[in-house]
Image (cartoon, rainbow, N blue to C red; front, side):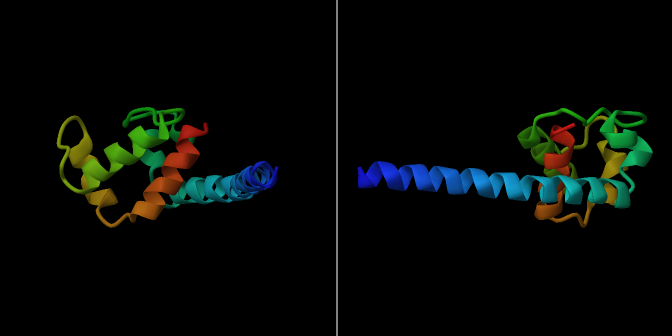
Length: 104
């Protein structure tokens, strides 16, 4: 019974942490998306414009593609235009923006 109680408490604590941190990550990602000028090519809230639609894409996919472009490992499509703009974006900022965009 003690093990079961411990598992329940751990699960509740994990859910609480996710609920508390999600709005912060979303707000930070939204702010970073705007402040880095992403809306100029990807449209308001990532809806697409010159660049592709990012809103609603899977978070892992967005992170992977962003890093490939930043690290000059992806050169297809319009990634050459994006590379200079994302050269100094941290992994943490990428994750925040991807969390925001995938939730749209």
